[in-house]
Length: 145
Image 1 (cartoon, rainbow, N blue to C red):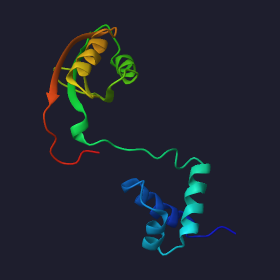
Image 2 (image 1 turned 90 degrees about the vertical axis):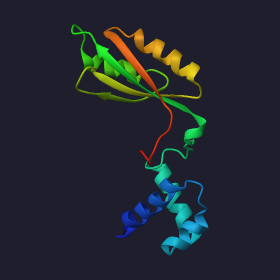
Image 3 (image 1 turned 180 degrees about the vertical axis):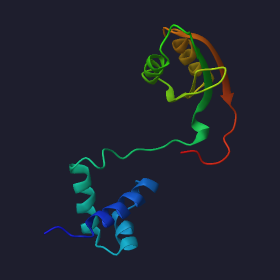
Image 4 (image 1 turned 120 degrees about the vertical axis):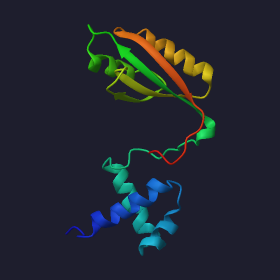
């Protein structure tokens, strides 16, 4: 018979791991009132069923350069198709379809400005892109997730 609290417990474990995927199982266990071996089994089960796909790192802002590229799409092109092409490009982290002078805004991330520039060159090659305007992000205030 399944434990009625299993989803709640798994949610607590997942919440802890989302904040720090390197947190030792013994510390997780102590914080939720379980044994270390029970936490280890639950994490393994979450991996086995595909809830946890991988453990990864998130690099801090000092290890990357970011830019916002505003894109105009020609009137003969489908903005949604251009957006899909943008998502396939290396360095394009996020794509927004927007209103105003430009049709699309992208967030581009790379280790250097030189690489950002090469990514912009790739954006300009997409059929339907008629104009771009890029600004380099100098500093991020707040915690954007």
